[in-house]
Image 1 (cartoon, rainbow, N blue to C red):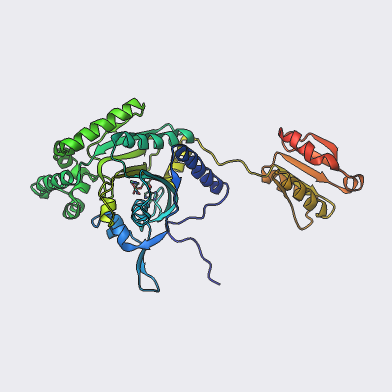
Image 2 (cartoon, rainbow, N blue to C red; image 1 turned 60 degrees about the vertical axis):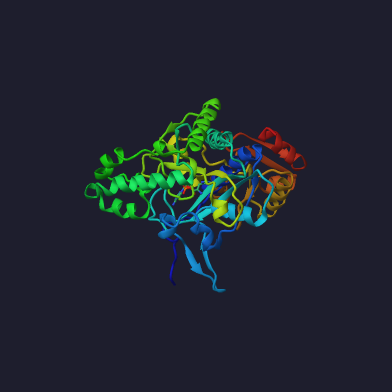
Length: 417
Ligand code: HAM
């Protein structure tokens, strides 16, 4: 028989990590719902055209898309991100603005798998449509920082840039093209290819031979329109008012084409591996119109769950939640009593588990240990006939005999509830 394993770049998330993932999403939901965001669940695949708006020259589109023709002959793709889907949903449903939504879930990119980079990866994120106010930019960024704070992360650096309005961006791209083309011999082979597709992305090159040319390249700040420059100044001042620390990095271009004006990235200073960007976002004021809707400003961010948890590991924070099993029932009389007691405890809202197959007392005690439950209940022949139970604390091993009728109350007391 063939045996199977997960595809490259995908993983099974097993306990206790799976509980940690859920907790991660729950903390995020708490933070953003308190700020007025409503949950949206976009589909995991949709018309390829939606995702082409992410940028025809981006690697996400040219190399990494999971696209295929379905049985009805439609060209669809697994979502590589969710911003485009949210904008498509906005155009489709025309909700009242400001439309503030949050999401959580997997995305798919055919990338080279390595630690912190997967083909299926999870994000949590927010998007706000219909507001063109720099105070919102600062508020959205502050929300992400608040989430990191709730996780307990301290090593998060916020980099900020403005890519200007679409005209500014195009003028800047042209200036970069002239600059790099006039020194083309000094540019790495990879960056020459990138230059053809998207001059801004050359600024992302980490190749040593490109370093000097990048340092000497024209600066975005000199190509901003007055309106975009004023917006950027106002965002920075609102961030300062909110006490959010940041560094302006005018080489920050990000890997998606739809960004206009404010762009930002969160980098973990605790991660040493290549993938230290744990989240990012920005304004995408032209995207809704690109998807056939009215001119609508938009801003948002997405935070990578997988990478952020690696950062949590590196900082020793936000560990996996404890087991929900509070009591393990050891039954040496055949298992029927364990079934009854578990039912009683669970109905009272107390986490309870048991062993099966009439295992030996020793084996059941081992399972009790492994369950992580702080308490165990032991039923032997004496307890069954006497209608009692032994209630034992796993740590320390102190135990008492209690009446079966009082069992739930005694368990509650022992759990401090
Ligand atoms: P992004 O920078 O492509 O932006 O992804 C955001 C975050 O998702 C990254 O910082 C990273 O932590 C995580 N991520 C991306 N690709 C992978 C991967 N292959 N494996 C593991 N983690 C990954 C966006 O997706 C935009 N939609 C963000 C946004 C929302 N902009 C405006 N609104």
